[in-house]
Length: 129
Image (tube, rainbow, N blue to C red; front, side):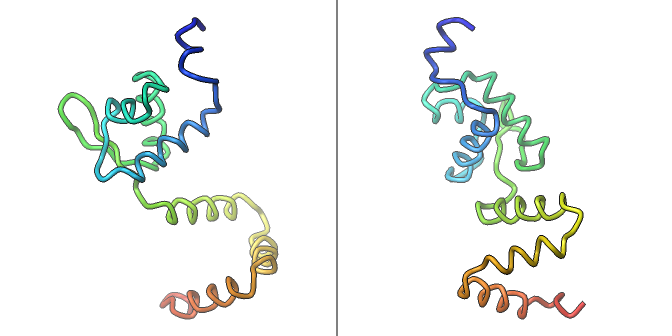
């Protein structure tokens, strides 16, 4: 890579860049185009890199997109707590022994968090299943 790549700052992992762009979109008041994302990042990434990352996030079903002019405008499918819940669910689904994972998780909760979880589960109409 040439000097241009060096001027844009140190190389970071794709996951970090995805998280940075997702956070930027979460803080935005409306959907953003790749050009608007590039501008808000202060030129830290090239336009084509931003397009690649947005396309990847869309393919992962983390973003929706709608046509705006000659580009797409992107918006997150959920808010920050929703993404955290998604990550937790993904980790749980990747493990073969769900009961053991849930038991360890429950054991690690503070008493206040355990009580909050009890309240949330108690108010869930599907908890009777």
